[in-house]
View (cartoon, rainbow, N blue to C red):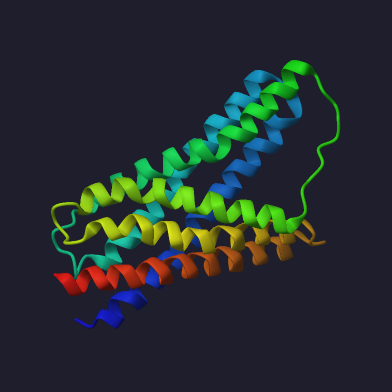
Length: 220
């Protein structure tokens, strides 16, 4: 079985699963946010946080199962359920860390009853922060997967820096797409742009840590 085939399957699997899984996650979060955010109460803020974190299970399920399908021929020792579970655990922890700062700020505003307008930073600052968030998120996301790999794949420790590097480039693409989607005049344009953005981000992420995965397959 060709290593190039592994990379192609892996990249495509990540692109499609991120587009579908993360797209559904954004949809769920957006619907919940639109219903609860206007209430401005501590209960609604905490409920929004809970639903946002729980929605990470949708992305984790699509991504985890798609990744296992892409790699199983080259890594038969990796169990499907174990890989899905590792992906799920990593995703939920990453979602908690990702949504926690904004939730704390919202709780603080609710307690202080502040109505001061929020000043958004320049886009280059947002994208730079997104890259840093991607590096941290990649580390969290891949740690539980690494636990599944450990002892079954030689040099499995490469998997964590591989994901950190991949998401450093992938996360700014997602943030850029979200910013552009809000500027679209029609809903269908925003949906189409986000679908293409998530597909591209998934392909970038999958393409990068897919190169590391091929390297690991060569050790087998």
